Amino acid sequence: MRKNIFIILVLAVIIAGCSGRTEGELAPMFTIEPNTIYFYQVTDENGNHFDQLDHQIFNANIDGSRYHQIIIQTGTITDSVFDFGDNHANLIYQEVGNFFFVNKLNAESDTDIQIQVLQNPIRLNQTWDDGFGGVSTITNMSVEVEVPFGTFNAIEVTSDSAHGFRTVDYIVEGLGLVKRIQSGNNTTTIITSLVYVQEDADIGVPITVFVPDVDNNLIPHERMIRFNTNDDVVGMFEELFREDFDGYGTSLFTQNTRINSVEVVMEDLDNRVTFLDLSSEFITEMNAGAGLEMAILQGLADTIGFYSNTLELMLTIDGQNYSSGHIELGYGETIRVSSPQAD
Image (cartoon, rainbow, N blue to C red; front, side, top):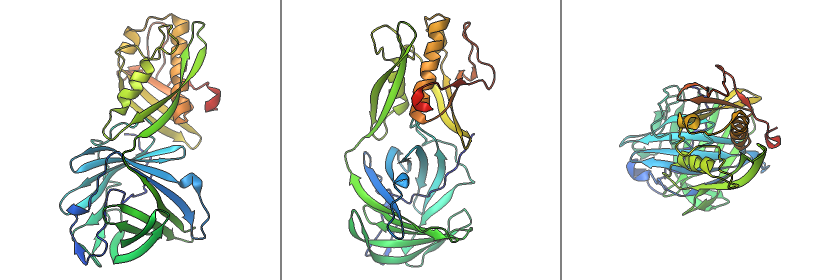
């Protein structure tokens, strides 16, 4: 499994505090809200705004005691999967690059990043190891915290990492994380604050689809994919790629083509590659000569590259190298994104 781990430990919009209490239980403290977007801004201790670090948090998938959260930041989407029980709340999976919002509820747990974020009972001076070499402590059960979204009474959780960094989280009952202060090792102090909560919301994702015309020239078409909690977003991309935009009978996908898997991987600091595996119908149902087929492949690469800010597409069919009779891609061979917007 390819991993680009970005640990940000969002205690989250999903874990509500027990402000104003002397002791509380873990189970009632979860507010796993569907179709709700939490907006956060990031500044330093002097109020200087780092707008490139601002982010939105959305619960993409919820199933019982497990939920899949997406953190949307400029140019980056991060998955976090949390699992909670009677006595624990654990971050069990985290990865960067899920631009197609694949459901990660059943993603393989990586013990290298499994972190305990909260533990019963919720009381002053309760301390636990986070599972990553650090220690967390509830340092205040009732502290007034002011953020752009309002003034709240919160509990305070202080976490000291094994590498000398300190994170102080302020958590409000029924709302979750409203403020976080990160400092240590002579670095700039970073403050994350809750700005706004939008309920009954969906996520809108703009995408430009490049489809060949009758002369095999790629024509851009602007679309928006909108989804709610627990929607099949990959299925939405499939439907979009089947669309006949110009009425010529040409689309990026054939009628029964399915996405087996899709993943954006950072090969190095300057190059991200999309790995896309499709079902065999992409080839068997395609009625195209070599020129149109190449235009369809280029349109697919440009569409995905422009959308996910990647430079290359690694395309396979049912896990095997692409081979259609007209076009063959060798092992490790990619299609280079040619769209001007992706340069």
